[in-house]
Image 1 (tube, rainbow, N blue to C red):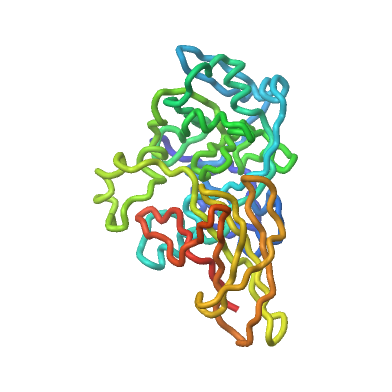
Image 2 (cartoon, helix red, strand yellow):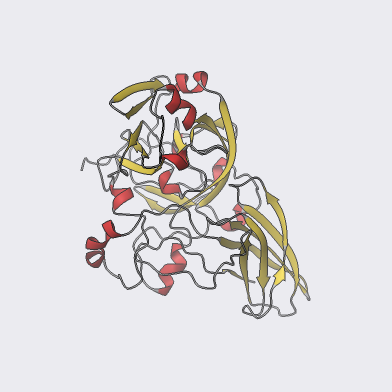
Length: 364
């Protein structure tokens, strides 16, 4: 692996809690996050596997390959040749709440809290439009994959960062995958993958490749480390890296993260009332339809109000005032989706500490 140079990184948001400096990994608090339905840039978490670099949009290009074809488009081409689409979608790290899972039993990974999630309005070109223009999709796409890669910056575990998803899902309407160059109406900053990143609504953040410079239509998944030997849920009896080595190829790459909820704020409004506010995240079986909280360890649940939800891919902001006569204690939250699935009390432990979704909890 090449030597990592972190000396030329841009300034990072001072509002984030730093979890690692080289590479830079940082997140906001959940209390700050839940105050904004659309996450402002200064509160968007930073997840990196190598140095953050700034690129000149005027000279940056993306290579498209497949079916013995290859072509390049500049950022200017992507912005001017294809209609801009926008979607509100939640970006979340697979390791969200890893610190809680690590309290059960040690795990491998950045000790993330509840802040590695961001709900943003993304703008860019629809992948379907671009692939049609360059002649890379035709006929049956059911057995194909689209691989995204960034050779533009170095990473820890491979020569480049790569990921893939099934092509048919990437091309689905509403709007499918976006080659994004805007976040919340502004040019995407280097910290968040500018000048171009992949936005794959419904997928975990590991597939939203930052600084994307290569797109390949392929009969197989990306061979990259982060697709094949990371971001997978191994059985709970696999407790060491050595035990995991022969198993990576036997388990599928993660796609959607599970139904989840988190409490950002909990405080007494009066001697008999507790105010609780948080966010909830949809899983693969439908959007969040209700959120409940409990102040008696899950014996009884009070429904709270959903105050924000925007489309199929956004998070949900919720809040409520619930009866509570004790001066201090713990409150729990759980989300319910449109298919009737309920967030479980306990998340499943796994070596990589991914996809934790036990009840949300907070002290007051």
